[in-house]
Amino acid sequence: MAAGNNTSLNIQQPNISIFDGEQNEEWRMKMRTLFVSQDVWELVENGYEDPDDISTLTLAQQEKLRENKKEDAKALYFIQVAVSTSIFPRIIGANRSKEAWDTLKNEFQGSEKIIMGNGSIVKAKGKGTIAIQAKEATKYIRDVLLLPDLEQNLLSVGQLVEHGYMVHFEDNGCKIYDKRDGKKVMANVKMEKSRNFPISFHYPRYNALKVEVKNESWLWHKRYGHLNFQSLRSLQQKEMVYGLPKIESKKVIYDLIVTGSDEKMVHEFKSKMMKRYEMNDLGLLHYFLGIEIQQTEGGIFICQKKYGEAILKKFKMYGCKSVGTPLVVDQKLIREDGSGDVNASLFRSLVGSLLYLSATRPDIIDWPGSVDDMRSTSGYAFSLGSGMFSWASKKQQNVAQSSAEAEYVAAAVTTSQAIWLRRILGDMGEEQAEATTLMCDNKSAIAMTKNPRNHCRTKHINIKYHFVREAVENGEVQFQFCKTEDQVADVFTKAIPKERLDYFRLKLGVQQQSIKGQC
Image (cartoon, rainbow, N blue to C red; front, side, top):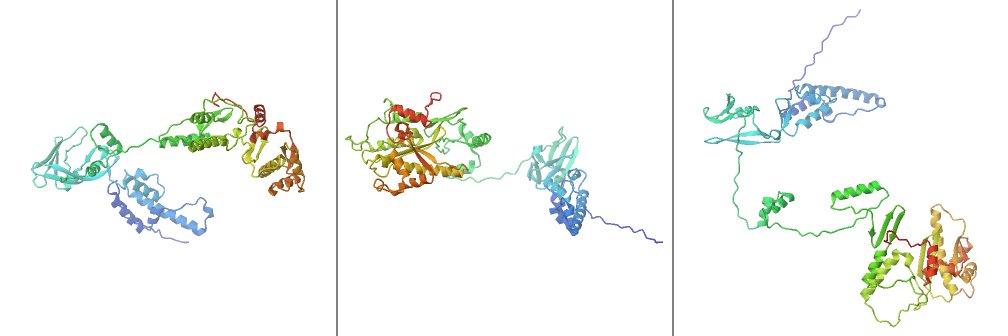
């Protein structure tokens, strides 16, 4: 049989001061000292981590976690018993000491707090000195709190007593007696319906010396430097000030074009830009760099009618009659035709305008043969389906001794472009197994591409053009004869009649279309 003695364990609770909303810094300093003495300050200040899965912890880590929870609960208890019943509801939902400690810090630290009679807390925005004006002298009371919510300074009876004043309440009134002469009344205030005793105070003012300055701009800065532009503008509109410096600014108008595949993102970007800058939404794009744009449900159409008319008006040719072809058939251009010199600046402006127009409108390009240097022009056009997608028109570098040689050089240039296009399709996964068919209207040139041997008729041709024979032999390209009447590439090399021009233009997929009378 075993017998035991009942042993009682007494734990002495530390003496903790109660926090009621006042003297926050003093209370927090005392509590910090208490936490340090109990070895829990680190938990209160930094907290501890609570893992999601305790089973992943080692035995030592689990023991450390239990110890942290135990010490944290002790620290939380110290905070709970150290606040008054009016403050406790603010931390009733806190589960850890750090949460309760930070809640009290955020609510009470940084400015003075005043607890009203109904339990509400009013924040004081400032602290200063007030002056009570008496008949003989001015009396000062320091550390008076400013409460904007009350729209007045709050002065407690305790502050008056601390400064040695005597306060007497009688017959719904309050009398404040001088601390030196107990019979001298400093203030006699009647109580209002709100049970307050309003006192009119005089704030201490500081006198400024009179200084004369000659620099008026410096005086303006010292007097009105703290004002914003809206206040200065209001003073000027009311004609209260004169001579304000003005900055002349010119309004500059910029056109901003926004493009994108996501309509929602485009609208969001436009809204942000309009909020930040002064700008207007002009809607869909209609005109850009001389190109008119018409966006409809059927597609997007562009033309340069307005730009072309502007060029004609600029160079005084708007009233001239139009022709059906870019050049007159059988007309040869000669450098020295006997005409006089022209204005170089005006001529360069005209050429530059036409170059931009031809670069943006390939359907109006024309490169005729030159009578001066006797060099031919190479031209080609590649089509996919019913539309042309690659074309060129370029003067040849060498003078051809026959039409067959000129066509052979053009065939070499076309072959180079065809091989490049085949490689692009191969990179896109569209490998071309069959040879690309090239149409040529010269049988002698076709025969030269199929004959790998050099003979007297081809020895003078630059060797760099003979690679076309290897391309034919390797099966990359093949040449097929077509009649001159069906050679659509002639629109890039020579002047042709209007009937053939319209026919070739239709075969190339170039059509004339008017959109609401604009193009």
